[in-house]
Length: 247
Image 1 (cartoon, rainbow, N blue to C red):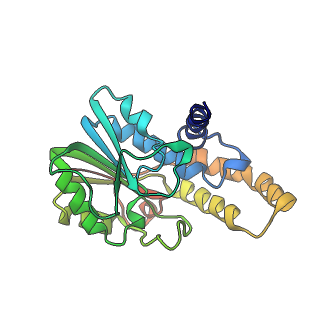
Image 2: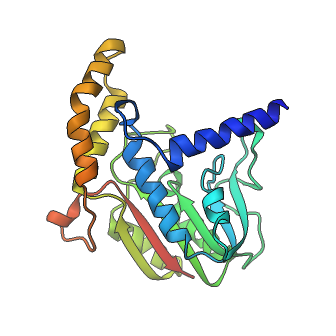
Image 3: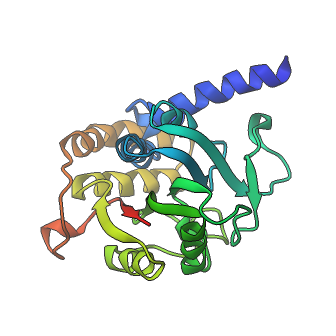
């Protein structure tokens, strides 16, 4: 009974904190990154099919999104061995961060959201992802660009479009497309949110800051526009990146 209750709480948390986060002063730190990521996952996994592997799945907030796709026939979550798992939700497969415990060509599609920044040798992991994918399979990767250090000391990289494309191409992926998750306005909003999360202000002071800044933050979020291509000028500031490719 307790486990069922915790799973119900987990479902509510996933919906509130990852899939449908409300835009409020209290959510400014995570709103842009989680909202834009959820939009990306919904959009790109709509093209998934067959068996799907979620690398670095955590407590699997996007499992329901994948399973809602009629073309997806199965979801497998992969993550590190942990001493405890939230709401007793363990990944379907456990790995060491380098070798995926699956046979060659085991999965049709693979997703790795906000994972590659934590991987010391990303080329090794992309090679391994390629190994377990079937020919013509689809890959979705997302990485942050503007974000503070997190999961210290396992935070190794911030990628440009060119570095991300290079390691994917070197791993044998083709039809590579890289897009910004959010544009310049969202990038500034994300920076403000991160700052609010780490500033020394506490209690009433932090709440006052959030209330004062929120109207500008809301304007940035609601007026944001993404773009295609990168030019080092107007199309050069973004929150994070998505990469889609084929095996």
